[in-house]
Image 1 (tube, rainbow over the protein chains, first blue to last red):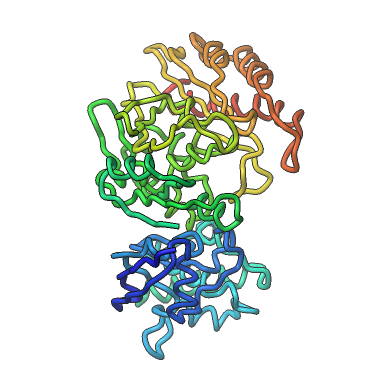
Image 2 (cartoon, each protein chain N blue to C red):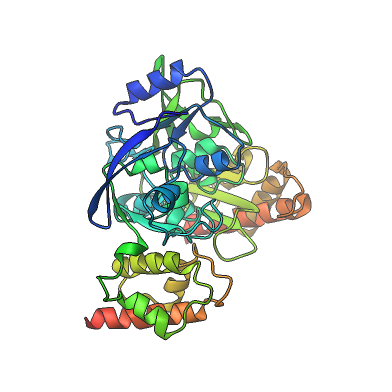
Length: 158
Length: 286
């Protein structure tokens, strides 16, 4: 298989890589670029652990080919904090203990960030529907929902 | 395996037509990548159609709407004009998968994946949507219900690509609706589903009607008799009874883990009634 040369932007940085045509963006991020925040849960777009934002759209990076990122803007969990300054969602996930094993957490944070950017004051129902593409086997979701509500309040005040 | 990103539909068609091994068209990839990963298909050529001019656009034309094959369902859902004209189609498209999947999946892909349970397809069939097919011998426009021929199979020939779905301009007093039964509230595959599209005359009587059922046969079914029974009525009790009976009778469902034949037959009728009631109200009927 011939490799595909890709030039893209990840978390604001210009990035170039070579990948196989059947390699997913998730595999590229994790195995070629060392960005291991996005996780492979199911590999079939059901669990949301690999969520990233491509050109402003929330997607599962396991359902995107690495080759498709050419010329796009990709945002991953690694770009969420500013240096040591956590994003309000990250801070509130910690305060509310909205994680246990943590495998789903990067996906939840990216999905929640996308949700709050599009809807800064979501209702509890909107949060639950908005995060329905992210599965968590530990928390029972309530703490996650509360953390997102709290973060929304902080972000509105900011 | 080769991945290509043609910039014109002619180039895409040309590459697909001369492909020697199995070839796949990539738009949103939410079905294709899952099937590749599962080892169900091993394409030697992947043709990404997202950079082809116009395929990512929704255009309002004199005749209605042209929805490019690469338009994600999330983008369709954000289009106020389509939502206003065809709320049933948009609702059906927005039921597919999660937010993450919505950012990628397309109605053209949903149609070409040819699942009998595809959510947007009964709504598109009820709407009388057309598919613009580009192929080696030029372009043709076909009714969407002629695209799927069985689970996972389509009538498209080698080298053919659906480049857009067309929806008619709406007359006054028109409405459509789509309902599915799933055992959860969200993120599931239809056990059975129904799409209904109606137009009314000035007195609120149904002038034209199309009814389609999903997950009730090897392909999405257009139930012409069910549409005919609605014409002339104002959805009175007796008409709704006949509608349900016809829909239940038209089903050729299977028994599987998601539902039995008996259940699917019964619920197909119930959903057709309820979808008809919503479409009627949307059309301004009382």
